[in-house]
Amino acid sequence: MTAPAQVAAPGRGSTLGWAAAGSAVSAVLVALLWLGPLVPLLVLAVAGAVLLAARAPQLLVALALGTVLLSTPLQALLGGAASSLDDAALLFCGLALPVRRLVTTGRLVWLPGGAWFAGFLAFGLLSGLQQEVPTSILAQGAFAALKGVLFAFAVAQVRWTVDHLRTAVRWGGVLVVVIAVSGLVNLALPGVWANLLGTTAETGPFGLPTLTGIFARPGAFSRLCGVLALAALAHHLVVRRSRIALGAFATCAALAVLTLQVKSILGLIATVALMLLPFLRGGRALRALAFLPLLALVALPPLLQLVTSDVDRYVVADSARSLLTQGGAVVATATFPFGAGFGRFGSSTAADNYSPWYYQLGFADRFGLGPAADSGQFLNDTQWPALYGEAGWLGAACFAAGLLAMAVYLLRGLRRETVPHLRWLRLAGAGWILLLVAESVAAPVFVSAPAYPFVFIAAGLVAASTSAGAGARGTGGLADDVNPARATPRR
Image 1: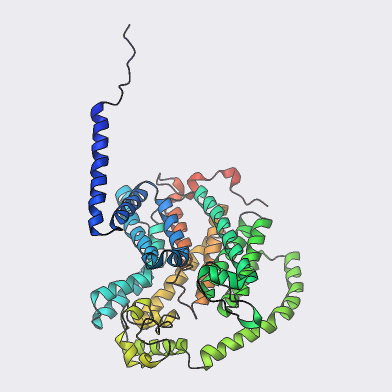
Image 2: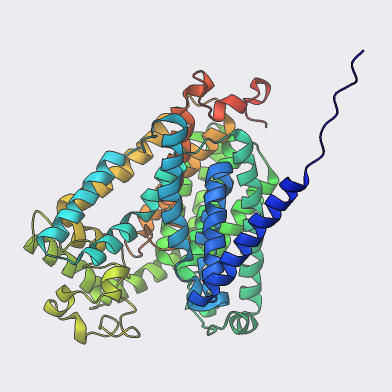
């Protein structure tokens, strides 16, 4: 009989090899300290991101989304060093994940509405070339205008499962708790909360404190509250009837209303009504109709007061927002069929690199629109003037068509979708688009944290699942991990 084979213990040479490799890496990191104290950390961060892209792309996407959501608190905590973390995370995802997809499968997943967004990009770039915009400004402006689309395209290149969506729901619940606690403490102790965040406690209409939660501005807080409220409502409607989901919806919706941001309130009311409409049948519809007069009696007077105040402030009066709206129309008409070019009107890039068009339009002498950093605070106070001002009327039409194509794509497969969590994603995603489009009339919601990824991300996630061919071709997808016994919503 032959003696059983023995597993050789790691040799001394192997141990010495790992030790030498570790020493070499340590030596390189120490040497990098000569370039700056943060350089080794940056190298380690990039190396970790590359490893995540290769081995755990879903976690990379989650971390990038978390960086966007927490970008304002991170800036308050870490200072200027964190001001570009969210953009860096999205740019890395936009480059690394498509490359990974090409290497592993040989093909990319096309984003719904992608052709229209490509048209918008082409108009913006051609406008920049026609207006001789410096290449660096043109590139920065293009990324700023399309970073949400780029992130959704990167998300579409990753394989997602139902378990991933369940995990997302659980983390969404954690985020709801954080948002709710911060909002309620802000409401009860506005002075203490403002001191904690290093901001100024202010009082809004009806004597209510200005709610910002963990963010610097009430608009950011109200938008994220609206996004979370719609996600909770969609989960309650198509995944599982739950008091927890209903409570999350009620809490987030109430906080969004208490911010007294007119665009948020009107957008949320309209979106919730449209989401509920297909589910109101028989007795539910009658109860809703019976409740509407009482709701209107309570809510309409203060809502009309808020709307009237905003119309007087931003439409009738000569406000910065109205000047940007009119100025963008002047630029788009003067440069037709193009625009001013990316980075030249209504965007953060145009504010940082003060656009020559602002001098021609007389903005330099207007409060909040001047060239100094502390006086240009309203230069990107709205969304659509940046789109048609930089890419022209035709470019803005392409962007609008892209959003419409995304919404149609999500809704078109809603009824025949058999996977509850995919139905949730389709319904919530369509609601997010509608809500944030409504808010875009008075805020740069397609490019400003924390809510802008939600305009586009649902379409990317659903595209990733449908491109997998329901698992039949072996490329993976949400349907692969679905247990048929759990494929119907639980009531």
